[in-house]
Structures are given as C-alpha cells and as structure tokens.
Image (cartoon, rainbow, N blue to C red):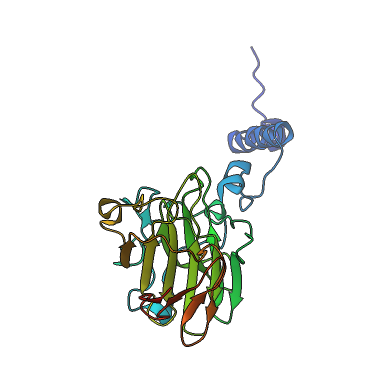
Length: 264
C-alpha cells in the first residue's frame, strides 16, 4: 500500500483553539438574541416602587440640644424603634406614631373653624398631622423643613388631637374643644427656641378630664390636668398680647409662657 506522506496544508485541518473560540462566539450570540439587554445601572421595578428618596427623620443642627427626636411613639404613647438612618435615640420630644420613613406619615388635618392647621415660617413648616389608621382623637404636631419632607420635631397628642395652631415669634400654640370621641379641651405651647412642650387639659364636656394621670405618664413635656370646665371655647385660636386670651363663648386668660390660668 502506498501512503501519501506529502504535508497537508495548515488550512485543511481545523485548529482546536480556533474551533473552541468559534463555538463560544456562537453561544454568546444565541444568548443575546434570546433575552433583551438591561443596563447594569438601571434599577429593577421592585426597587423603584419601594424607594422614597429624600425622606429622612432627624434632628436639625440648630436644635441639637435635644429638641428633635428620631424614635417613634404610637397612638397609645408607647415608644417604638426609630426610623432615622443613624438610629440614635433622642430624649425628647416624642416622635411620630410610625417608625417608618415614609411620606404617608405626614397627612395634614383639614383646617377647622377654629383656625389653620398648617403655617409656614422662616425655619420650616408647622403642621397638625394625623397618620393613616389613627383615630380622630389622635394627631401629631409636626415641625417640618421648608420642603415639607423632613421631620425636624414631632409631638404626639393621644386623646386630645389639636384642631388649630398659632405660630408666634417665640412659640407655637395649639388647642382643641371637646367632642364626642374625645371630650377634653386642650391648649398647648411649644417653645421655638428650646422645643419645650407644655399642655393644659381641661374638662370641656364632662366634670372631670377623660384623660387621666395614668394616660399622661411618660409623655414628653409638662402636662397639667384641670377639672374646671371653662366657658371659653378652646377650639378657637386665641389672641396673643401680654396674655393669651380666648374670647369665643367666654373669656379665658392664660400666661403665654406657662399656660397658667390668669382669669376667666
């Protein structure tokens, strides 16, 4: 038998490396044609639906002395875990009723006949807010930044939801008249320099306040109970002068700093 021992041209025999490269290239092309490309930086639909950019809870620098809060207190007044990124607890005041960082936490209570429930100032926005699911007897007094998105201070009012607010250069006042769901009247004062809260609760529709000493235990600020049923309507915003004077339905004069009763 005669064997052909002449050299075979290199192109007649496929190189193993070239063949492997060709197979890998074909597989890559098949994968690209079967699934659409996605930019690695584009967020998934699930991520974009649950992210709320720019919404934070914290304490402003000018209130670093303890006026702000990052914790949470429920409608019952109990404390819950905070929602701030830093996670540091602040001694006072009480935080909103939900620790979640969400715009749903801010829902302005509609303006009442007694006065506004929102006021813009040079240092932000003050608002009476009721979170989703809270009863009508509950509301928060919030101090927000100028955009209305960042909570700077929050004060919880279980059982005596404010119905109006009045902002002055030194303080923010709020108040309410009693109703069927929450029979007590109330007037509050927040010092704008220190964040200190004072509250006077009055027996508006009953002989004794429905909110008792036990209900006030652990609440931030100075809360006082008054068994008197004043003829003046605390559900209408007062006039501020040398005294804080309520004139609707009767007359009630309070010390504008301590809320001590001066006369009625």
